[in-house]
Image (tube, rainbow, N blue to C red; front, side):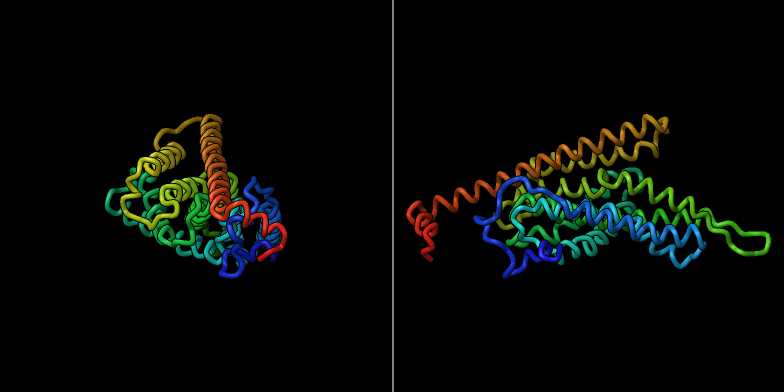
Length: 308
């Protein structure tokens, strides 16, 4: 596990021609999920059995970030070029997630709360501009990873806020003047948002990142790229998925129908994500073929015989 994360630095980024340009076999994300689940269980036990409020911050933070971070580790494993360090991923989660939230809050202040699916996706796209100009990150799979990291930060901070609102909204004053905390309301909020997290912000922002990086390729970033139809189509898809996701705020559907809608939206989002992963692998394969042709068969033969 430790060796797996040692990538993306000046001396730890493999040459593109040496990476296996095939579908990876991800395994680490599941290990991270199990570790997070175990740690969450510890906080849950502390709250449930002992009523210890000191366990609440850990319960909320871990319950908010566990699933989004698990998905980001999956993206990390699927990043075939192995050129993005985990430091940069952490930076995208922390700085990108906060920036996306702040930009979205400015948007809500200007346009109201009626279009969260549009405003929040614009906010996440704005956060991606912190990373898109880096010449080292030229691959579609880089955009998928960094976009997913921004989305994970956004999702985690937002879920923590909802859990805190559930905590405050269900506080009860006892007859003796003490305060009773409704732990069940917090747990239900974390469970609901955690189960659905793979199809939410961490998926929509990943799509936006993959599309923007696909448009950029190995060129320097230009603002006109944001107007490219290939990016705008994916941005519109993410906005549409997000808007339908929030439809329960406007039209109160029966729960079974609403959950069926959410399941459908998750499937659509991940079909698009898997398509981008396939496209990203083909991009790496094409680059490897191009490098091989530039070197020529004679040089390849010499390298195969151990000649420097």
